[in-house]
Amino acid sequence: MIASIQGKVINKGSDYLLISVEGLGFQIFTTHETVNKSRVGDIFFLYTQMIVREDAISLYGFESEIEKQYFNMLLGVSGVGPRMALSILTTISLDLINQSVLSEQPEIFARVSGVGKKTAQKIIIHLQGRIQSESGIGLVSSRIKDTDIEILDALTALGYSIVEAQAAIQSIPSEFSLELEDRLKAALKYFS
Image 1: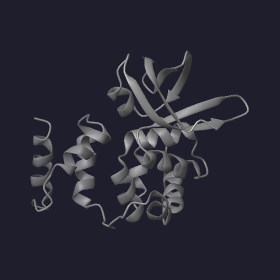
Image 2 (image 1 turned 30 degrees about the horizontal axis):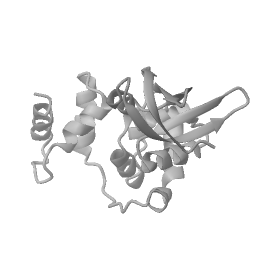
Image 3 (image 1 turned 135 degrees about the horizontal axis):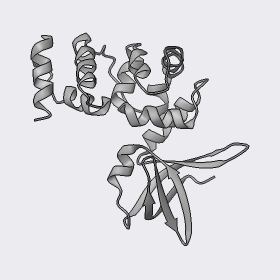
């Protein structure tokens, strides 16, 4: 098994890096964020998960062990393959995954392309109780504010990605007003 890899980035696509190690080129599928951080010619290190199927052997790469753990937890969900697990990690932050599972909000997962309502519910059920014990992160259970869900919907309707919308919502101070209009204005200021 290939558990990690370090080498020179020789090419990159929208969802993969081609890393050269001692003359061998490894195609490693990874999140868009990781692809965007890397530059051709740089030495790059990734934790990897090798997936062996009848017709292919694939490598999936992550910048942290925690990301890799979440990937493997998602693979344990019936109906979630490596590409869907990677898509979930690309679209939803680990913090939002935690909050969604702890507050039982499958609609967050259903926003990911290719994840239906039933699969989203399976993800919630499968990850409950596993997140804290397997990731080693001390989590605080908190229901995602309904207003923040509405802000997330509004920002994605305006064309912002879920990741951008999450960042804008997280930039709102915790002691800020709970009124929808005030919070939406504050989130929009993040983009200016």
